[in-house]
Amino acid sequence: MTETNLEKYRKDLDALVGEAQSVRNSLYNEVQPEEFLDWVLAEVGGDEKLAEEHIRQLKPFRVAYHHWYSEAVVVIKQLLPDRHADFVRLYERPKNRREITLDTYRIEDACQGIARPRPNAATIGKKTAISLITQQIAILESVKRRFESSLFDIKQLVQADLFDSELDTARGLLKAGFARAAGAIAGVVLEGHLKEVAAKHGLPKTLTTINPLNHALKAAGVIDQAQSRHIEFLGDVRNNCGHKRAADPKDADVQDLIDGVVKVIKTVF
Image (cartoon, rainbow, N blue to C red; front, side, top):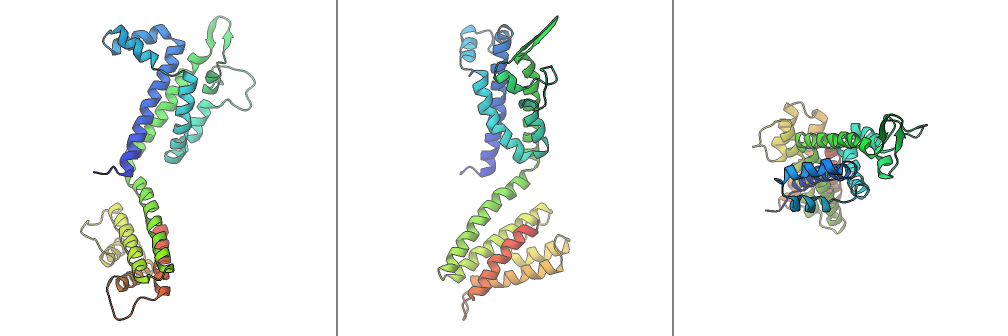
C-alpha cells in the first residue's frame, strides 16, 4: 500500500521528536559525562561496550543542535505558530542583553561555548541550556499532539495541493480544445471538496455526488442560498461535460466551472 502524505508527515514528526532526545543527550554528555555514562549503562543493562558505542555515535552538540533546530523551527512555525516566538526566544540571545545571567543565557550561547563564572555559585554555561532545550522539546511534543488532533485540517491542506494540480490540468485541457475532459476533471475536484466539507461537519458518508452534497450542506447551514445556487449551476455544467449529448459544452461554461470550483474551495469550509 502506498504511503499517504499524512503518514509521511507523522513519521517525519516522530523522527524529529526522537532526534530531539539525541540532541539533549549530546549536551548531557558534554556537560555531565560521568552522570550521562551512568544513565546510559542503566539503559543498556550495564553493558559497558554497548554504552560506549552509544556515546560514540552521538554527534557534537553544536552540530546536532543546529541540524535539529533548522527543521524544528519550521515545523513549529507551520503547525503551532502561536508558540513560534517562544521556541525561537529559547535559542536566540536577547538583542538588548547587557550581561549574561541565568535569565538571559540562551542555547545560542551554548552552541558557541560561551560561559560566565560566578563567585560562590555554579558557572553559567552549557549546563544552563539543558532546561532551555527541554522547554523546546516540550513545545515540539505539543505540536505532535496538535498534529494528531488536527489531522483533518492538515488533510485539507494536502488535498488543496492535489486539487490545485488537477485544476491546472483542467485549464490545460480546455486551452488545448478538450472542453468536455476539462469540465469532467473540474467536476471531480468540486465533488471531492464537497465530500471533505460534508465529512468535517458530520454529514452522512452516503452523500457522494454534487447535488445531494449541495442540498445537505445547505440544510445544515454550512452554505447559504446563493452558494447553493452557484454549486447547482456548477453541477449542471459538470453533468453536461460528463454525459455525451447532442451539443458539446461551451468553452465559456467550462471556464466558469473551473473558476467556480476555485471559488468554492476558497469559500466553503
